[in-house]
Image 1: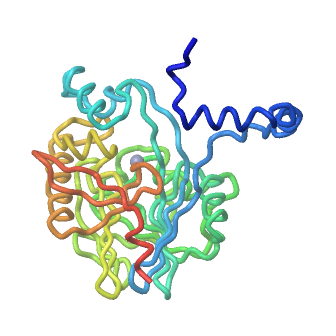
Image 2: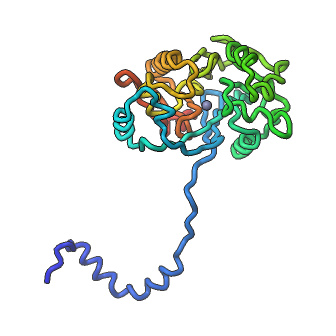
Length: 310
Ligand SMILES: [Zn+2]
């Protein structure tokens, strides 16, 4: 009887292993490493000119039925086809919450604060920072997953910080009767600077109107020593569905048409200028490029580009 499945090479290996087979048995019994559970890195730091930029994993959670959030005006067939083409399931997704901290050399600037005070404090600690080191907190917009960490049971989270946010955004929420804004952000008005499109947070960090997701949602452009990086916040909330189909309606976009127009304009600019960006809800570490593709954009996650920044 022949054994056609065995190549000559594997037959030789099998024969060679035979004399050692008894000795392998007790060793195998001792080599049972415990299952460790899946892991994620908790922060990612890179240089941008004279700045240090650190994206923080503030949290991550799975979402069921993502089409109900990211593809309101797509057909189930379209949603399934685009998902399959990008090697992700159509019936579940994973969301990420990614505050970013920028050390300009002169000031430590935190963009957004996650869902809760304990979360942002832990995320900063993992990256080597304490809340009292934060000089400036930039709030891109007033949704709960961005302002949640501004204050907690112990009071304000960042005792030495001043705050910067969009004027349109702040004015909208001031009269919206929103509990999160009223209890966490409104009391900080004295320490808050309101910016319009083109306003500066600090030297090298400039506000860009990106309205639609919320009434005064702002993105920010960082520039240091000729290198640029955009903090796009929630301009897009999913790296496939919202980038490749900027017109697909997103449940959390308060003005859906304006949000789509902003996606096309902002990612169009970033794609043309080949500027990388950090997206608050992009897969961690949340840094990538947009490449123009069809009537939308392909998300190109960074690999080692930032490691070459010196
Ligand atoms: Zn968000």
